[in-house]
Image (cartoon, rainbow, N blue to C red; front, top):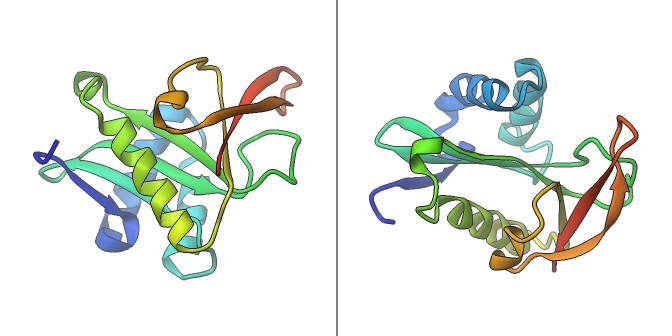
Length: 149
């Protein structure tokens, strides 16, 4: 696990453009939306952050924390979003390390609980997340919401 570096975007703010493009390429959300959230974080307008896993200088994993992740429960905030690990790096514990870093960082800032939405049914439980409820996505389908206290 020590062969990769886990950072907040504030630790390597010069990766902002690259990180926004990387997340855009994984999730299809406009790069500008990522840049807007990242700039708010880097300018201390929000406590919510962006986290990366690097293999040397290459981004191989990432995760963010935002106000709301495309669901109708605006009262359940903040939301972990955009967790992605490059295929060739999966099953090495990287996602778990990123999730733990986010949870610790948010708790250190006094932000708890935190939420996430997912189609997965057993992945997040391994990292202390609990199923909370079903929420309506913006496109009207239901999706699972998890909570971490």
